[in-house]
Image (cartoon, rainbow, N blue to C red; front, top):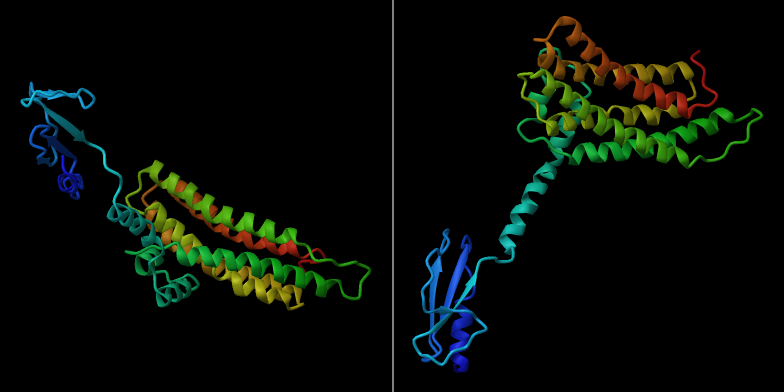
Length: 285
């Protein structure tokens, strides 16, 4: 086979997109390359003249058949997989700000998930909200302890473990609570049609109100600090109540109210836990 014949044969080895298999038949006598492309089906009947690749024969009536059935992924296939993951972060800044504002304003006649999240739930906003909350809570907590310890017999030092504790608590709350709620709703067979991504998105944005609350903890009025915790938990907690009430209101009243109360108390407990953990010398009054 002459070199230009080899070049021609190599050109036929490049499959088109969507092609499952290519059969290349090389005629040993004339050095010609014949190509037959089979799209979407297997070759079931083999010719009696087909011989294995490693058995060379001088008989001009025999040919060699090479079958290729597996091709490496193309760049277009990789782009499709990337697009599926990028859709969770495909959100504009104005949408993030709009969703943050909606997560702080409970409206009884408005469902935050349907009016702000659908049809494009994202993970970009919730991720950065949780990350920001980790640092604001840890830094503000250390600064609040420093200011509260001034003038008393207490040796203050910066506690780096607060960052680790805050990150564990916040990200665990963001993932575990939505997972539990989605499991309960799925088990009870609710008709609301909430997806796990939508619930995860709602819970991520519901933590946004705790960022200014944690920053304002540096104000050294204990009653004011607890007031901020209560206001923040009630405002964002009611948003969660109005979101999940339509999903459970068809249940037995005791079960429905139990789910709603647990959702609200868990949201309140996160803020109260941080306030109690960070303020060593804090008292309720």
